[in-house]
Length: 112
Length: 113
Image (cartoon, rainbow over all chains, first blue to last red):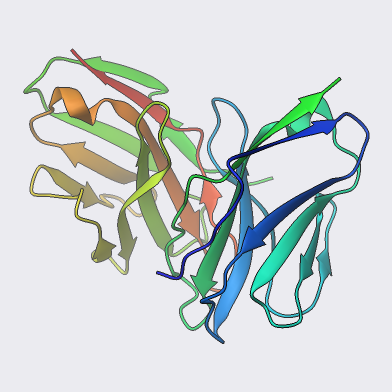
């Protein structure tokens, strides 16, 4: 499985933007970049995914470097509810049912 | 919004006993997964299931574990003879062929005493 590297933890002030980085220097051409998060005492939930272009949805934005070796998840205005572990994951796009493999992720703390 | 449901939310069992963890995936999904998360550790993949058979399994998924889709709606994980180290949160997930995300349930906390 292709590997990703994330900081262990980050802090943000409430209502400020948060940029969560991820390095994936060994990404292959068919790997999609997925982000999931896990709120305390809950199951993981999908946040966003992309291949080459930047992506936006109601939860977040995903900025992907031109060489695809890194990406950044952007939460535009952090709320207390965004405190969670965020996982950057590569999934093989050739198989739609490829398993999700979690690393340790980034634990985001949001300060009121 | 459709969701993956898991029962029970918490199960306590004695070492050596068999347990069955139950999951109802989202109804039109075709791919099913079990994961576990030992307290304070990362989420670990156990097994994936498609077309009524295991498509992939991890080293953790040994002969003590089995999965089944008995009736077209439920998806179960059986642990035949539980050990103390099986204590963990177990998450079920499902996905469809035409959407990228996997949907996870809220988990079953298994405590082996």
